[in-house]
Every structure is written in C-alpha cells, then in structure tokens.
Amino acid sequence: MSELFEKLSFYFTYPFVRYAMIVGLLIALCSSLLGVTLVLKRFSFIGDGLSHVAFGAMAAAGIAGLTNDTVIVLPVTVISAVLLLRSGNDAKIKGDAAVAMISVGALAIGYLLINLFSDSANMSADVCSTLFGSTSILTLSKTDVWLCIAMAVIVLAVFIIFYNKVFAVTFDESFTRATGVKAEVYNLVIAVTTALIIVLAMNLVGSLLISALIIFPSLSAMRVFRSFKGVIICSAIISVICAAFGILLSILFSTPVGSTIVAADIAVFFIFCIISLFARRTAK
Image (tube, rainbow, N blue to C red; front, side, top):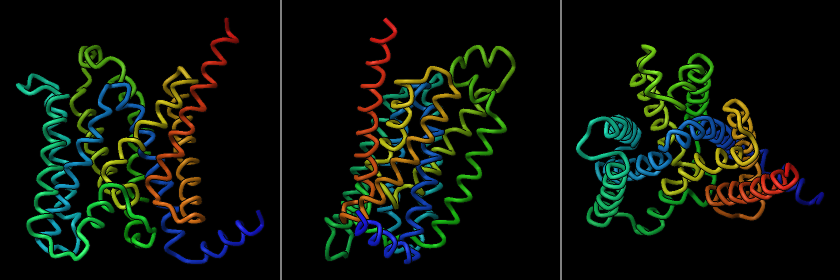
C-alpha cells in the first residue's frame, strides 16, 4: 500500500497530473448537476447526440488545419443543442428522432471526413482517442484548467440563482408556463450549458462516454433519495468521488482515463441498486 502512495505522490509532482485531476473533478461536478435535470426531463440522450456532433465538428476542424478546434466545435455544438431543444416543441421531427438523426449523421460524417482527408499516420488511434478519451493524461493544458474552472463557476451560478426555476421546469413544464415563467429560456440555458460541458469533457472521457458521466451518477442517487435537492447533492458527491477514483486508478495502472471513470460510475450504480433493494425490503 505504501508503494502505491509513493507512486501517486511521485506522479502528482508533475503539473499535467494535477491538471487532469482538477479538470476531471470539475467536469464530473458539472455533469452530475445537469444530469439530474436531463434525466428527469427525459433528455438523457441529448448528451449522447451532442457528443457525436462535437466529434463531427472536431473532425472538420482537424481537416481545416485549425490549431484550436474549439472555435468550430463549440458554436456547432451549441447550435445543435438549441435545435434539439426546439425539436420537442411543435416540430415535424420530434425529440428522440431528432437526437438519433443528428447523432448518427454527425458521427458518420466525422468519421468519413477523417478517412478521406486525414494525413495522420495512425488514424485509428486518433479516432479511438477522440471517441473513448485519451489513454494518456498528458493532453490537458493550463488553458483547459481555466476553461473548466470558468465552466464550473457558470454552472454553479446557474443552479444557485435559478434553482427554483430549474426545479419547476424539470418537473412540470406546462404548469411553469401557466404561471408566466418563460420555460423556453430556462430550457435554452440548460441546453447551452450541456453543450459547453460536452465540448470541454471530450478531452478527458471522449465523445462516446460523456453520456455515461451525465447519466450514471444521477441514476445512482435516484435509487436512494427521493427529493430533488437530495438527488442533486448525492449525484454530485458520487460523480466527484468516481472521477477522483478513476483518475487515480488510471495513473496507477495505466488504463484509459475516461473508461476507468465510467467503470467506477457503473460499479457505484450497482452498489446503490443493492442498497435500494435492501432499503425496500427493510421498509416492508
């Protein structure tokens, strides 16, 4: 055990390891907060759809030779988030069909562009790294850290300032509109914030694993807690702990960061399912 602690202490002397931990914890926190709202609103797959859109935009930015692909990826993902949100209201293509169409289309076009125009000598590794997260934690820079800090501040501010409105829109959107609250505005805020988190999280967990980071902590918390506030707090704690545990394991055993974090989330979900089962049996 002492050897493991010594190994961790040694690795944490390097800035890029500290960057990975900070970014991972902040992304996990923000994802869990938004995840509760998305799951309760039946918008869980928006995260999956937007992550595929981000992959397609990232492929286009790479083909264009941009050193900073966020210039293309972020606007395209935000616009897609707005379109997906509007697809639930009086649209010819309804929500689930729109998510599936945009998700599959963006993923296919992105992969096609990479195959046709990429000059990389190791294209399969590049694609796997983008889809499933980097196998290394050397890719995060100080800019990524500051972006994630700004993102976390924005998300926390949105939840604190608009907590009552988010709560109302999440549980009964029709009643919220009837009371005079502009539900579309708050839905738009949720969609844009989700797009921002997905773009920033791609460096850590990859486009295919982002949905898991959003969904699993929320579902785990819902196994035990029933109040909205209780689920949010528990989800945030679970997500942060799993992110920290996953990053530490990836450092110690050289496993992919994103996959390890998601595996930890899945393990916690099953643990909470067992706790919920025992709690129901005890109540009887």
